Length: 236
Ligand code: ADP
Ligand code: MG
Image 1 (tube, rainbow, N blue to C red):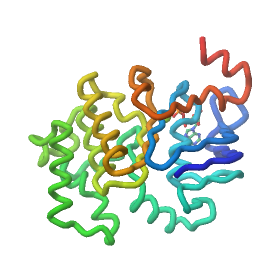
Image 2 (image 1 turned 90 degrees about the horizontal axis):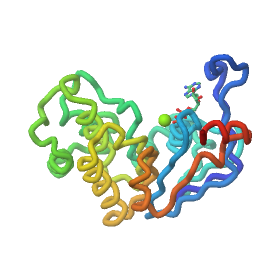
Image 3 (image 1 turned 60 degrees about the horizontal axis):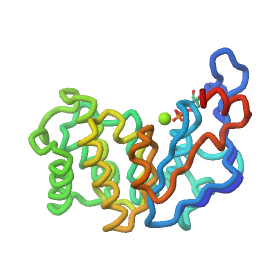
């Protein structure tokens, strides 16, 4: 499903780090995730995990190297083709949720239908939205405004939205970061069920090492840090 080869990416001028002249750069010689499997992504803060998810989703484009998502090569496609591909095939759980504040919980989960008219808002999809929310323990909050939710509740709304269309690829950025261990495991079950029952591919960034044994593979970003000094610093 995912094949990354000789990837190089560097942020533009906006990416200059404090006390440093050089922008952040990410190099990944090879990364592969088989369709229908799950991969955890771990590594120190600032090592480029979110950047990688944005590259895989086609939000960012690599400077060189290749990324293939199945038959789709984001770098060779237009902005609109990448956006379309993202909406139809990828469920993204953003680290900062990216929820729409003026919409209710239910309308946030149904957002993919508003954005992409080729995803019709059927009664079945409405039912699925409610089912997902109830699976996440949010059934009593469907009409609530997003601004009136805790961080953990917002995070679960973002997860429901990502799973609404049963996407082939789920990219989840620390989706259990704000949750207690029990809720965190519920979310893990929901994500892993998508892999097991629907054949989805899951790439999930996490700092919670107790979850790692539930994944088919773990991708450690320490291997991508460019200098041995950076590796040592981040291990201390
Ligand atoms: P992680 O998710 O592993 O914590 P990120 O991918 O968010 O790391 O960030 C990696 C590095 O890229 C950091 O040094 C960060 O400051 C920088 N960075 C992240 N987003 C941007 C951006 N939009 N523009 C410039 N630099 C960025
Ligand atoms: Mg991050």
